Image 1 (cartoon, rainbow, N blue to C red):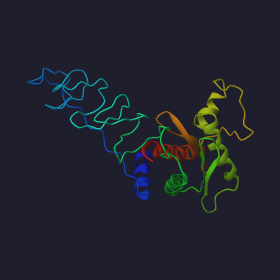
Image 2: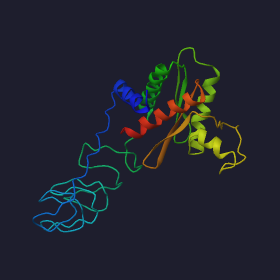
Image 3: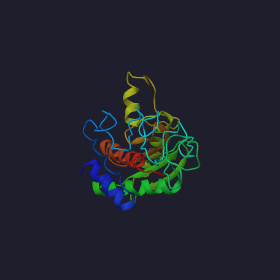
Length: 237
């Protein structure tokens, strides 16, 4: 089973709506009127931002015209004002964790959902794991132990999640970096555990927390924690 197949299973189980597939850009063509060569718009509504269309002048080039909702945050449009630049306003918007609004990107409900998704994926692999999820300050939010999982995995999962946030990288990457890389000579201890199975929970260049998985092989722990991180990256709060 591939990672994408596991993601689909987890998304279906947890009621997470999968992201819409990206639309293919329109072929380049020359408009009969207006003289535009970008080929990315329909007549009467240009989104290339490089010329005037029906008296409209836009400088951001990142939105649709004709009554559009702007998400660039660089200008006002029809009384619209966006301060964070990472979401759509005017009601019903979904924030991706800009840090400038009240929408939570990682709360207890989402942490529980991620842990349950990892449990479902672990069951598919036939392993019994412990899942730990911490917030951006590396404080424990959720500890989820499957039946008959190793007692030692409880601490290991928490330390992997802590390490992923503290070092801002997956734990197996940290291990490699400690052997001649940027973390050369860095060792385990004081909450740091550089064993595969820990990933930061990141979206849009910001770390919101970390996930640690322990109980399977190195490869299984890495796979399961990576699935959790990828699910977090793909969904909106």
